[in-house]
Amino acid sequence: QVQLQESGPGLVKPSETLSLTCTVSGGSISYYYWSWIRQPPGKGLEWIGYIYYSGSTNYNPSLKSRVTISVDTSKNQISLKLSSVTAADTAVYYCARERRSRDYDYGMDVWGQGTTVIVSS
Amino acid sequence: DIQMTQSPSTLSASVGDRVTITCRASQSVSSWLAWYQQKPGKAPKLLIYKASTLESGVPSRFSGSGSGTEFTLTISSLQPDDFATYYCQRYGTFGQGTKVEIK
Image (cartoon, rainbow over all chains, first blue to last red; front, top):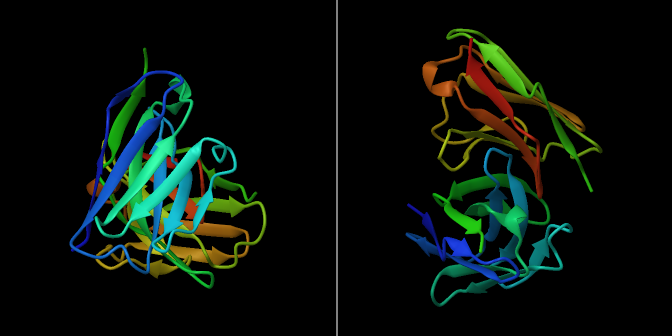
């Protein structure tokens, strides 16, 4: 059974770079898309971007200039970097596995438990 | 960009009620729509994909329908475990969520 675990600093200073890692266990990263999604306190879900195991990416246009998602298949890990953070980036950050291709989209079927990141000095 | 609009934002219902949530897309998404359930402090859970296909392990009281720009999630008989927030999603866009509360 595939499990995802997000990890990283829970507190980031304004203007710095938020860095998180999602470790995939119980299965392979290969042949799936992997997304990052965030949820500010009391608000809805916001998709940040995805990466295919081969390394191709797609980002939310509203965050594109600040986001980098990468994959390390040898470690079964996906990473998120979000630069120049502000208080508005305070949120629970989730990673999720997407069952999709160019021809179909079967949803995000496996999610991590989420990790809270607070942006504050 | 495609926008997804859910209605209502909040829904008050009782155990045993039939509940329907609507999701409208700003342009056609064919049948590529998913529904998720989220409980406080927990990650979302996939309920339905491809508009009407029930994810494995999801109770049959949940159903989805629609295509193009209008979709519905129906809970045929609301159970205590179903009080939660529900989101529709198409690729990189989520609806704003519908909170199902106890009446």
